[in-house]
Length: 548
Image 1 (tube, rainbow, N blue to C red):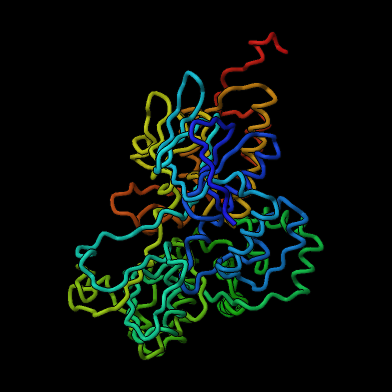
Image 2 (image 1 turned 60 degrees about the horizontal axis):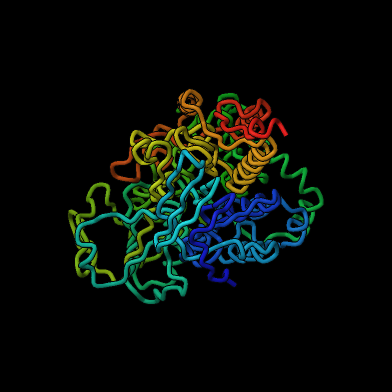
């Protein structure tokens, strides 16, 4: 059930939240607890965010379901029963709808409303929030909960408008589904979405052509129905389970904990056995087999070669196996989890097209033309990902002090303090923004941390009658340097990944997330304990009333 259509134009709110995905819903719950008057604006037709839009075949989470869930309500944790180790998109969306219903969130959410502009007024310390469909409201605080992976990246190939068949993007899949039975389908892109979609589409299509520019490392998910006993054991001490996960760098991956040992202290047979055990258990555990895999190139090479060996074992055609075998650092791009991806290429009607050596030149009325051939297709599926971390933020015309545009400020790459605030933009918070661990963690844990931090901050401002909070320029400079220093000690920045924005033509390449969840949590706690050091607090209204 959607929210009632209510015209709120001209209304003033304490807080406006942009986005009704998992971050926006929890943020709404939190500010409502504080007694603040809030409104959420959501571009989609209902709650769910990523899981509302991404309905492509095979879509599922790559974080285990017992971890990818809310922890703000003990009752919610106990009552919801997950059915699979890795939940499918429909199950996650059912969960999101359950949360919205259980906590009566929809009456504070305006759906089908895309925020087009935010303008800050320095005199009143208020934001004007404008919708693309017209109308505007005022807000003291704006919280951007628009998601790290929500701005779909549709490539700009020549001839896009000439193709006579159907065109879809995995991030904007039709809600009614798509019948691909017996059709000639082209999938462009082999990141996480493509890796999940290919095996399912292969079961339906008459012919499937997978256009690959860069081979991806993908590990078996090892998905299975969730053991009720296992789920009950976790629920028996969910608080302890959550606390334990928050101490890990990725804030998750409970089933296969990281190994603190060096790979160079293991014999070849021990190394192989460790990799094999983690491969068999499924999930991303291969990357955590040894502590130095993501900081030492030689150590990384052992893990990469193990996965390449598995590809050669699975894929029957040696030439296809070679094309599917990546040569970059394993883990510098987001690792993919799959169910039957490599096996799909053993099907006679599934064809791998190497567009690294023969790039796509254009779409034609009949299909896709590369430098060496034309492929006749009925359907083209773009699994080309997202303008990660900044795309959704910069899709809104955000203007702070003196009309400063966030787009202009970030021309040389995103710069924040703690991934939460930006100098020049008072009373504006970003949930899991650039410069925070976000996409390198279980997002639900990072969301939980940011929502609570922002909520505590709002309460502090209320209690101390402070009108505005703004990240300082010095704090921003120091934080950006810190994020870069941490990344440069690892292999993460070593390849062209969406962590750097390399998938978006013209986007400045900057490593956007921060590595290491526990240290980040401690830093944020210290900032808050020290009166929000690094932030400028202004307009203490207690002085206006003689301290009363």
